[in-house]
Amino acid sequence: MISEKEFSRNLSTVKEQIEKACDKYGRSAEDITLLPVTKNWSVDAVKICEVNGIKRVGENRVQEALQKMESTPGTDYDLIGHLQSNKAKMVVGKFSCIQSVDSFKILDKLAKIANELNVKQPILLQVNAGEDPAKFGISIEEVTEVLGKALNLSSLRVDGFMTIAPYDPDNNQTARDCFANLRKLRDAMSEIYNMTFKDLSMGMSGDLNEAIAEGSTMIRVGSALFGQREKNQ
Image 1 (cartoon, rainbow, N blue to C red):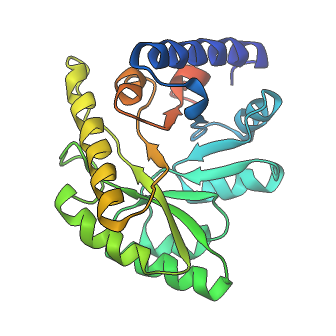
Image 2 (cartoon, rainbow, N blue to C red):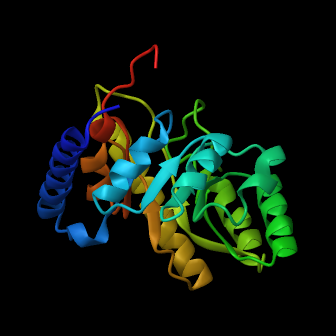
């Protein structure tokens, strides 16, 4: 685990990258939420975030996140990893946002549980905007129907959309095209349903510039903040 000093230095670097991208593309850095991804790290990673004034993190695995929540009650957790339907009961009311809602089945499960618990669960719809067979997510063609159903479920609140760009380290345009697809989709859905969807969760350490260029409001960053995890850790 890196030291607080190393994390603070990395945090400054990432914030500087965000500010430069915002300047380049006419955005305000204040409109971008930096979501540290603390998966696979101990709860100390979350506590280092807290020391640096960050009170919202992203986690991929449900049980790992729930364990961390016990000792960090002042931090909000977003679920950004794929959610299996048999774990839906474990997440509703626990996560500040479930960003990985990618099917009618998950929608129904979450809505039923949220209704039983009398909570309104914030969610994002995960869209496979890059048409990558290796990624989870609703297809672009399905989004209108899935969103229509989600908006009729009173126990859920759709705050926006999330995507993960296809892995293509040799061509930045691949990520940018994916992010542009999601932005255009969000704009179309806003017009169809006469609603504002405030969150576009897209972009990570390697493609935050492309994400900001295309309107991202949330960048999910892990390795650029915490470094690479050793294989034996």
